[in-house]
Image (tube, rainbow, N blue to C red; front, side, top):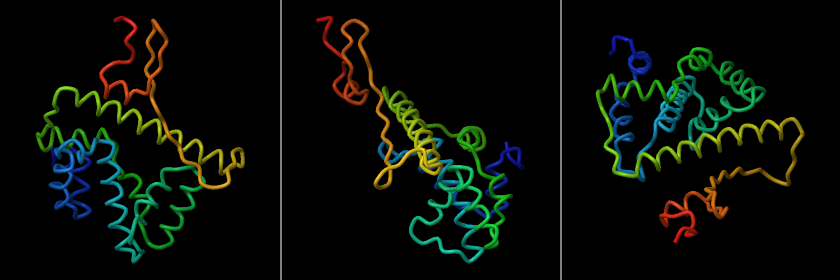
Length: 194
């Protein structure tokens, strides 16, 4: 694909980020505990673009400042607009940057079609990856909703609110319910058929 048939190829060139393509591939093809999925890679890539533009504008990117700003750009609309205005006022081309943020599908297309790469998943790995992606997505959406309710004053707590999503599996015969992670780890939901 390329000569900008791919959004990632264009961004790598226009933002002068060619050297990060190898790192993108390495993170995708790493061994399971370190391997990043498409969604995580999209977040990493978008944060990297934001960090580069913040650096160019002379803003601090120490610690997790770019990650924090990126998360807030994706949160409640009011917070996102406040952060966007703050960045724009500091000289970050935020409108262009937001248009250039990539989705996980764009990352997947770039890795598979432009780089002609793939990941060999051991038996059982793709299922674990799918469960992890679903859990992360649910966690992200719930966190956004809880933050919005908190901002609107419809939900209060003494401190920050942490969201934890747990998937459960249930046997339709005996109705035993078990957290999915435990069931997968031990290899069964229940033993009612023994």
